[in-house]
Image (cartoon, rainbow over all chains, first blue to last red; front, side):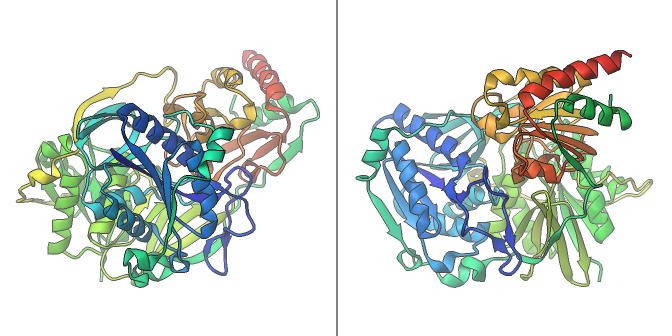
Amino acid sequence: MKIYVCIKQIPDPNTVVSKLDPATRRLVRSGVSLVLDPGDETTISAAIKLRDTIGNSELIAVSMGPSSAQEAMRRALAMGVDSAILVTDPALAGSDALGTARVLAAVLKKENADIIFCSTESTDGYTGMVPGGIAEFLGIPQLTFAREITVEGQRAVIKQVTQTGYRTVESPLPAVVTIASGSYEAIYPTMKGIMSAKKKPFTQLSLSDLGIDAAQVGEAGAREQVMTIGKVEARAAGQVLKDDGSAAQTIADFLQRYQLL
Amino acid sequence: MSKTIWVLVEIENGLPARSSLEVLGKAASLGRAEAIVLGSHAAEVASTLGEYGAEKVYAHSDPAYDTYLTLPAVDTISSLLKQHQPDLLILATTYDLRDIAARLNLRNNMGLITDATDLQFEGDTLKVTVPWGGETVVTATLPGQGAGIVLTRPKAFALERFEGKTAEVETLNVSLQASSQVIKVLERVDVESEGPALEDASVIVSGGRGLGKAENYHLVEELAAALGGAAGATRAIVDAGWLPYSYQVGQTGKTVKPTLYVAVGISGAIQHLAGMKSSKYIVAINKDEHAPIFSVADLGIIGDALTILPQLTEEVKKRKAQ
């Protein structure tokens, strides 16, 4: 089978408070450390596991981003992905979910994918709208919030997370499958994996390679517009204190004061 | 000119979902609210929606919507969009509505804003409020032609009742295509969980990576138990496999609005804040004085959770016994 996984390079969520630039009204991506979205590490691991279970299959990572996203692709390759495709083009800056889905779907359309893995949402933008957009573009079903997936011939069955438990859901392939966080253990790249990543096929594409009109993507094609960015109404002023050994008493006093005990 | 706003109302156990009714009430405050109800109980549910703000309901009673996810609903709503020109669609953020929204957006080239906590029209301009992290709030709009979609955050709006009001119900004459009946639900399983459910708990103690390892999570559970609350987790530790997904608080985990939220070893990534920022009182314990969680905490303690937690649990038990 030809299995694909859509991934994204984002500002490191663990070291950076995501900032919006009031001038450009976009997420600040420069001057911050960029990493493969931690949610995608889980999703890649799920995809690798499925590839190995089905056998005789290949797994290709696809991404849209600035050229620095190559590093995220290399990490995916080091984890065990077989090859990678990156779409990078200055005209893509400021793309919304619809524009992103359009670009990724254009890559995938040429590829004859059997299964397309995505995370349920990215850790930075978290709209969660790209996977469904890709599925709609390709005219294929989507199986979302999967915590488990099995493939039987040309049919996929998932255990789908719900508010109260789960549903068992099936669809024919090809399909987009989104993986719920925490469902799979992330694979850590080994030294061997890192070395072999350098030799794996890596393709870089631009918009003109995909035949996409720049007016439909990037900020030009975005159908949402930020109007203002402001400071949130402050909650009642909070105190931040260093523990001097009496933290437990301080917290308990607070709880008692507000009748929370 | 009054705006016409569509709300897709989900059905749960034969009744309209509370999250959908909250959005319907909001829509009614913005203009003329019209509901769309699809599923085997659509007719019964449709007749109740006037009291929740709907002036008109489009209903299609067909079990196919219950068995086959997403695509039949996207087909029906898309065909309604071709026949009518609403100004806006507002959908609550639930698993199923997100999937529907993503495809509707693309199929009808609409425009979509997610995670909104409020919205209003100023003349013809839609202004949507989207909080970002602990300190920022964004207003956004949908400048394009035609209706767009806004997905609203759980519990953003209170339930409104319009006693005695009835809605005009239009039964849709739709034949669902076989080609859209492909994502099939084979079974539904509800999992019993111990203790109060996160969404309903008035006290939640949540743990994050600052706890160090899975073996330390019991300290969170012990404090939660002492306070009579529920235990929660961040995406980071769920991803690391310490706990199942049902514990996750955050954008795709659960949105919670407890009276007290105690965040232990949690840095406060935007996704997590999105899920708990509306808690009435927030106490945070973290070793890192720059952790974003401190920007939303009413009381923040810079210290070692592993030391403080057992001390706090003891202190809580002591004071409760007095």
